[in-house]
Length: 229
Image (cartoon, rainbow, N blue to C red; front, side, top):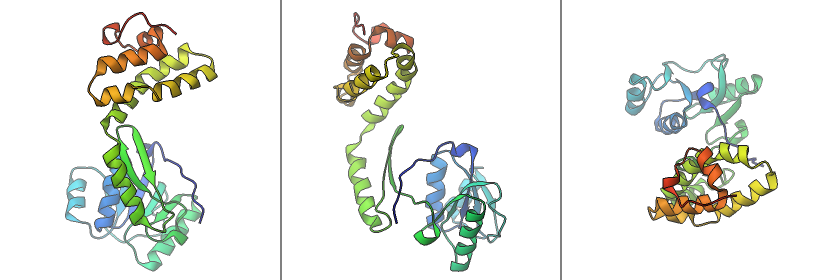
């Protein structure tokens, strides 16, 4: 199979139907909820951890076996615990309704796949082996979890503050692109990692200029003055 990597957004506006109540379903439910998904879990039995999450109002639970028609309002469908017959029916309904479906550990019935995910703030990195060696994806995830520290998340928080001002103030797309790369390749992330916010802000102001910083609501006291684009 050929995989095209893509990230789903606005999961809070879609219902993710999750089939199953075992520990695999528990792991997937926790992961989906961490991304803000509206989860509808269908299973006659669920784990204790899932029951506790349900009692906290984290997701909707239908305590019975799956039936054709359960995906009528779904935006995404995931089967974690199933019989072969149920998996085929679940996948068929998803196809009938043009809904992306993942039948875990059964790629022939799936049109989407999950990777091993590393998150650091707004930074999300995923690894997929096309279903051939998931253990390799897990090891890569573990390696990058060690290497991607919270400085990357703080850098992205700062980027989120600056981005509207950058788009408004710098109309030349090529110049914006050049400066984005200059900023990413600068010492800003290293300064954040070392806890030197003043230096990180000074480098940022050197690259983007006072006007962008001020439009982003960053007070001049946080960086060296006298910078201009």
